[in-house]
Image (cartoon, rainbow, N blue to C red; front, side, top):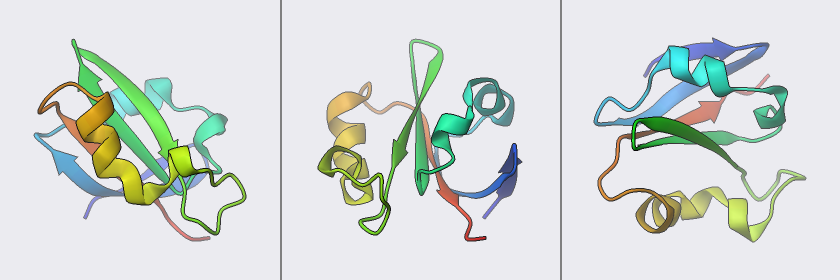
Length: 93
């Protein structure tokens, strides 16, 4: 699995469906807003990338809507059909 660094945080590219991961595009959109999340999902639609943070239940930001166990549901229900996407997992410090 590929490891990357975004600002001061390290991530592992856990899934890269249809080569959806583009480091340059992620670096452009990434802000410190995403640092507290355990996972970042990026999906492509109409040539544009969007990012969404997801959490494990132990995370203080945890809410049902950002529960990592529902990533597949999010991709199926909220993303373009069969779109390119990726999942980044935050590395422990």
